[in-house]
Length: 180
Length: 291
Image (cartoon, chains in turn yellow, orange):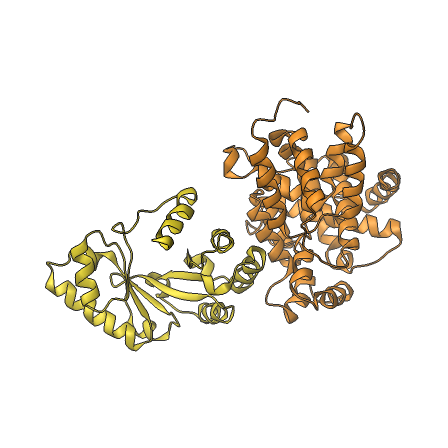
């Protein structure tokens, strides 16, 4: 519904939706997704489903099917908080996600922690090879952003740009950002 | 209904219009005509206005959604059109309804006559049945709300998939498979799931949303345990019984749902065969006065 509001206001802004494990293992997941897309009348390209890597501890056939159906519905997938949980590379290979979001744990110690930076660089390269865009979460300083961009990260998310905000302030914020 | 509720008329008007458009279901023209002729009178009758508004899926949903919007910041959510009217005020609501009728910016979906007619009848009779049966925890207003919105996914799918009318007639005729199974052979979803999502977007209570989502599912209806709240099951049962009575009275056997779900519904409502017969007799009089 938020995506619809943004779309109506003329913003082709993606809206990310967190998916819980209970939702992802439900055999009716795809039906619910299609129903939500139909009711909200929003373009599926504007919807991104965020999955945390703990969801992938076991990828059952149902989960596989739900992920495939989601992509068939036109939405895209992103892996959230990557790098601190199970981080199973075999799963990473199998999940048809377009975006990999690196956990903020790697970001907050930058730029001082060179070892963290090495891991970020390696994960970024791996993600790129798998055809994913890499997003770093939780950036708060200019120095962190410089280090991350230098490591090849594609996009930055965090308080440095904007704190979480309610709907009423989001539209004016997007407006001012687009006209700058 | 008090006349002292015009606190924020313009916001309510635009919120309401927005809600109706979001609902995505056109209001019934016949009900709109009735509404306009009542409101055009020198002294419109409040009760009659409320009843007219409450018989239309689109307007009722728009009012409930408006009343439940964060703008009003009311903790207790409206679960019926009457509660929505209490929150918004009949006067402000009527003005908003008249405004959107005049602007006439509804989606154009053909062949909704049967949907409008069935929803209003089933809602009315469901409310009446709930009063007659006096089942603990089952309020007549909830039964009315559920009966009105049970099939609200249908017009949305009709507007979205050009061939849905054919799917619908096939599902109506199928005596073996569940209604939603038939839909799912052709569509990626079904009208019960779409209706549930809509009802959630109007902030209707979860029991009503779940009832909408599962109202063709015999397995869940009969399952033991907590898969579906008892209130949801009974709402499903009462509306199904209402549909059965309406179809019998009008001599139209349009669906196969009663043969598939009827026994389970009677068990949920604890109704015996002789009791059912007397309900039929009493209901006949009610249906005739409602027209």
